[in-house]
Length: 238
Image (cartoon, rainbow, N blue to C red; front, side, top):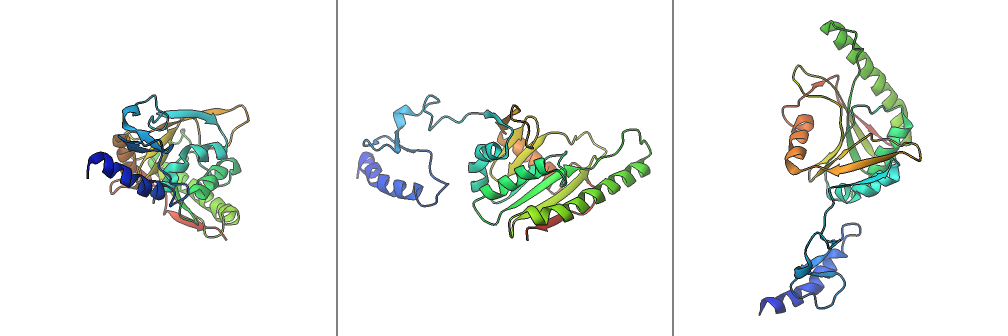
């Protein structure tokens, strides 16, 4: 069987496969013999000028939960572990919780599970290390108490949010930028992972694999770049 004949035989199988799991369709089926099928891309047309092949490095969007969800839906559906890094996340703030709830809804496996990593606060005027530790522990308790009160009632039944609170270590690593990291990819958010005003815009950018892997190791690897402010806790929707 020639290569052209083999590819024509495989078109129906590829087309059936792309329809098998809703939400996980192929962007295109590439072949040297597209045979006029609208879902098959001619290999000769593979370039950044072809929308089905081109992968933009990011996009500008409104700071709305649905817009964030649309931007990362494919990543969420293909991932088995989802980690949100937002040092400024606070469980008591509904405009931040709404984005996490949107991510949970977009996951392929339901009910969903998202890990959220945030940073505890300490007044910069406090210089004594012992007093700094007490301040971080106090803020950790405040955040977890708010999560215990707020999250179970707003999460969908069985949905889970796993909270990890960090404080800076003695090294140079900073807790500042916002990321969505998964076992298959990652993106960075330019401003914040929260619902803004109607006029507010943000840019989400795709991380290269080296950056994603380093950030993954820094937050969920065997040797984190930060120090825990207290035990990680998981909250389940009622």
